[in-house]
Image 1 (cartoon, rainbow, N blue to C red):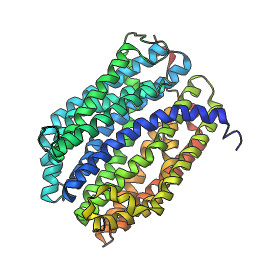
Image 2: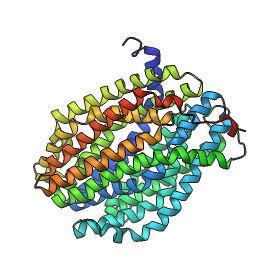
Image 3: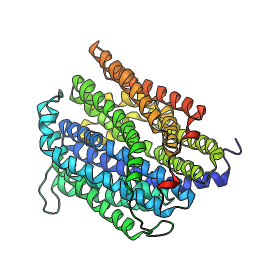
Length: 455
């Protein structure tokens, strides 16, 4: 334990983690501020905006998850001292974001018809379609921020993407205030205003991050350009697409849980669920940041030829991330109703939305330690290139167990609490399977980078 909590090693982990925590928390605050401000307009607006934000993220998550692999390549190549090679993978990530942006633009006109397959109340469906149509305009910028953020992180600089994330957060909160409520002479756009605020802030923040990348700021070697390589791009996709589908199928399962399972329970349980998810997304960001930092250290250790250091990095990451999430779970148990009141007006503080949400907070407390462990293990396996196994683990746990289990529970008469317990089962199962996989050591035999592809 003394080695696990070695002060120097902990400082190294936390120095990488805290900018990621700030950056990811800033992203979560964007969704939180959308929900908190729009929630003042009513339950339909809250449900449409929160569910719309989650649905837009579900659409972006495949390319986002794909470019997460940029961090794995960049960290391993940085460990090898190949800074030009790492930079090339930043460009490959931007190539994926360009394709994603074009698909998002082509999809925007069809959002209303696509939402028709779900059992939303007409008002919620109309508002959500408006929100999604606007948010899809920022697809290229949203994925591009992930691509470049993972490049900088893999190179050991997590502060540059942090600054971009904080900028996006500040701009989003400001534009929310202006466009949702019609301040400073702007029209009061309500739900559409929240969507425009998120879109504009994302595009501006991406522009700043791209300028830093273009100039080679904040990374070892500076701007060290070399010719792009088609074989490298294909190799990135070979490992990155399973990584993307990891996230895609998991979020698709949660989208099914929200759009199919919970919509049948009514607008109030759906709005309460969205509030709990928005709050949890903020509370979870430190654990995700710690997991991302741990993955950077794993990748750099592998790139430098020190695979024997990886188990200690992973154990330390799991311990720190789980410690944080344990505190989060305790807060959920101690003050659930108080936390829910962030999402309602003063007149609604004693209403049904707060009561149902507080019940859900108790259940959410049960999955915190499992979620921290699963994320830390999945990120470490991704850094080593073990993306295909985690993909199948998520598919089976989410689609063979959680999705059908929750649907059958509701169809059999179960309420929102009974349905939510299936998330606990899913996360606990995933954590156990990923721990088994890591202990088996298959990641030791994976060759992510190839010297023959480097220039």
